[in-house]
Amino acid sequence: MRIAVFSPEIYTYGAMTIGGIIKDAGYDVSITRDPSVVHGDYVFISLYSTQHLMEEQIFSLVKRLKSEGSRVIIGGPTCADPQMVHGELNPDLVVTGEGEPAVLKILQGDDWEKIPNCAFIRDKQLITTSKERLADISRPLPLIPDDISTQDIRGAQTYIETHRGCFGRCGFCQVPLSFGRKIRSRPLEEIFQEVRAFKEKGVRRIALIGGTGSLYLAKDEVLNEGAFIDLLKGLAEILGPKNVSCPDIRADCITDKILDAVRTYSVGWIFFGIESGSPHVLDLMQKNIYPETVERAFDQCREHGVRAAGSFITGYPGETLEDHEMTKDLIERICPDDVFISSAEPIPSTPLADLVVKTMENENPAFITHKGEFEPLHLTEAEARAFDLMLHADSCRMIPRLTTDDLYHTYLNEVKKQGDDIRRATRLLQKYHAR
Ligand code: SF4
Image (cartoon, rainbow, N blue to C red; front, side, top):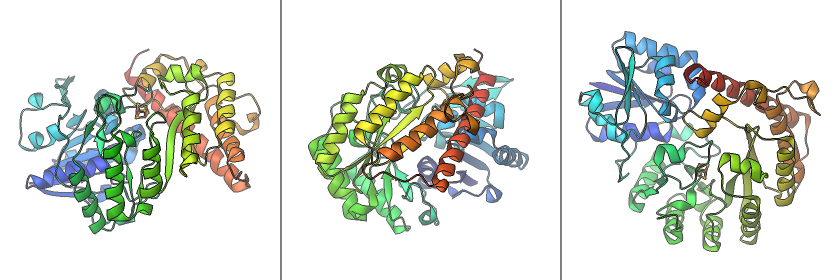
């Protein structure tokens, strides 16, 4: 029996993990990013973006594979909304949660109804099976492709997972819904063994997955700073400190020792999920991390020689111009070394997705035509605010960045692309979920 794992554009960590479990069980399995070479009795497709559901290339791939007699199984973050995945791509089976408890049972030919975390169509009805989260997330080595060293994701060849879950409740985020609010961590030695295996395949730099880097081995919302420091130290010993990136940490999950470890054993940068400078919007998002905490975190980073950056979300339904100005004020106060700015994206199954479906388009900043300063650029309100924040953040850096023509157009194209993607995702959600 031949088994293939397909991961569009990049080898996702999830796809490599599933491939590793299949390989470890003794099956003949391959992994690829190229849809034209995908063949197999069973084909596992890993989709991480809602946009994949609307891509002709993926639709044609599923159709071809089914016509060749393959069993097509789709998993990944998009599958939190299995109705949409079945409706758009028509695979045989969708894995709706953690794939590990399901994958080998699927290959052994178990009755799908008895396999956890699955969704399939029977007699035109969507059948969803029981939900299961692994208590222990230890696992075999991932299936690492030979060309992994050619991959570049924000400077790293791959992300790795050290733990799952987050005790936050951010309404735009899938992590607590998919992985729960309790932290489950992998054994340290297993992580190191995996990183050594990546290194042997040519990986030079790795990044830790997710927004919760320092929660490794945390229990009941209490940090385990010693465990996190041992993790970074061990990774630095394998790859060298300049090749370990722990980009995302909650602003309320740092300590002096953690910051010293980030400076010593990693590239020395942290991205905080700040999202907004307005308590009103932060409440809408259920972020529960307010500007005072963010300002303290930035000061603390600078005291410890760590570069501090932030991500922001514009155009959340309910965000007013006054809220937007508060975000600009916060940026001015903290002077981030870098920013990542995006319009609010309704990821399936999140509270934001529900909110977006319920919000009339003429009240949703992603659809409202912008009438202010950037009117000649034909942007929506969400796009205009994202564009404005990008330009503003550049002028607030410690060393301000000059806005060249090239940069101006790069930002403009980026916000327009984000806006198009978000409207497409919103319309897809509206198609499957009535107001
Ligand atoms: S803190 Fe980060 S990972 Fe946790 S729920 Fe919020 S956005 Fe998600």
